[in-house]
Image 1: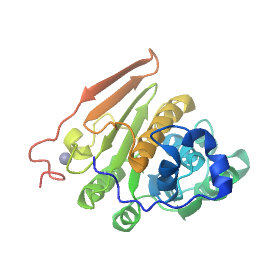
Image 2 (image 1 turned 135 degrees about the horizontal axis):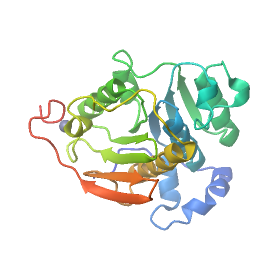
Image 3 (image 1 turned 180 degrees about the vertical axis):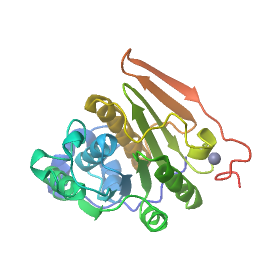
Amino acid sequence: MAELPITPAPLTDEERAIYEWQTRIPDFGEEGQERLKGATVLVSRLGGLGSVVAYELAAAGVGRLILAHAGNVRPSDLNRQLLMTHEQLGKPRIESAERRLHDLNPRLEIVPVAENISEENVERLVGEVDVVVDCAPLFEERFLMNRETVRQSKPMVECAMYELQAQLTTFIPGESPCLACLFPEVPPAWKREFPVFGAVSGSVGCLAAMETIKLLAGIGETLAGELLTMDLRDMVFRKHRISRRAGCPVCDA
Ligand SMILES: [Zn+2]
């Protein structure tokens, strides 16, 4: 895909020292790091997937994260939502997330949004970012972000998991299928609450963060046009070709 229009931000000496081990990657280098610093990413929901995506993006030195998640930390979040801590039980998730991320990277600019993605905020939030990472548990939110990222021509990294299975792809408007090509309707088996190990959501979260870093820095090959499915019970990873659906009401309108 064409390089994303990101204005690179010059690094300080402190940042050069912190990111030294990744700027040694030849096709990434200091130029890639400056692109990450100049970038903004929206992570929708900070559950088992989004917590790890945001943590890895903060560690990698993405300059600005817009984080959207409503509600308070519950005991049942703590087996996988790694930005939530025991002492924050009963308090807003977004505060816990902000604190944890700033402990790791105080240079990170965080825009905390104590709401989930909705018709009211989706256009504005997608409009502010270079890449969207979709970690929402509700398909209605996923469809909203899909429609808006196609409309604004922004890439969206799409990750999902159930029990010990997971999947990941990247949607690039104009080049790859969109979410509505893959799922014209909410999949009947999709559930709001689902069995999960944190190690499964965390694995996919790390891979989604890597897709995002590649998109921002303009390195490697993304999963655009392919769906990576992972069965962690048997450790079977497969890539499947996916195509645009003629007459898709979102991307072929
Ligand atoms: Zn489509």
